[in-house]
Amino acid sequence: MKTLLIISHPDRLGSASQQYLKDSLPQTDQVTVHHLETIYPEGVIDVKAEQTLLQAHDRILLQFPFYWYQAPALLKEWQDQVLSEHFAYGANGDKLKGKELGLVMVIGAAEKEYQVGGREGFTISALTTPFQALAKKTQMQFLKPFLIFQFQYMREKEKMQLLISYQQYLTVRNFDSLKAKEAWYLEKLQQIKTTEENRFVLDQIEDMIHETRENIDEIQMYLDGNL
Image 1 (tube, rainbow, N blue to C red):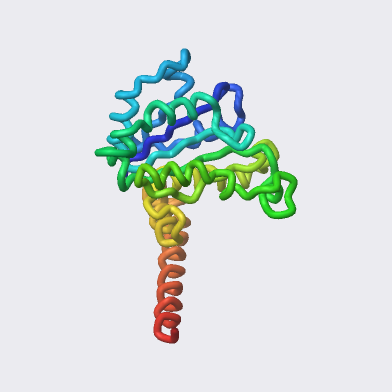
Image 2: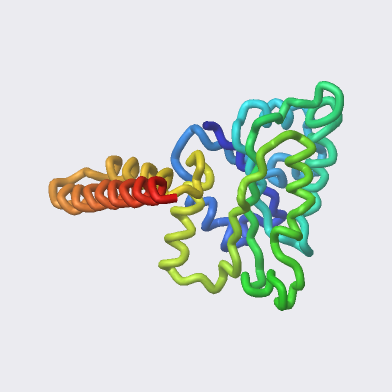
């Protein structure tokens, strides 16, 4: 699976959250990072190049700060120009059909504010309806958004979990399933078994993951047989 990460941020270098995400990017040729403001500093978009890039990838992720309940101006301009008729929709406009569309959104307010009774008054699901409609119109599968609330207040442990979840969102099929996450962890464990000292500990962790999976499968078989 090849992922295209389209980033829109007018001051990426000055953003602590964007720099952390940049440093968290997985080291793989399966992820293409595409920062619109760097590539198009004058705002003049190469539509054909962008369309070619989209066609070469399976998962399209839009990463941006949530400005006034919408994406930054250049990303909106990118949508208007690149997702054109006869390419993304309309007659013969099926070039994105079957691909995945996801959002990586950095949000300044607390998560509790985006619910009934919260200060924002609307859920994130409601506020991202235009992107959901975009996915439907272009025949793409809309993924569960990756939401980062109040990065500036995160503790180190929370940031480490963010790093792991971010890498999974970029690289793992069915990233939200427990089995897919287990496979990802096992793959990473194999990659870092470098010394005899840490090999023993990592082997124990690997055995624990396999044992937990067997227990879950047994429970699922029991439930399936009694429903």
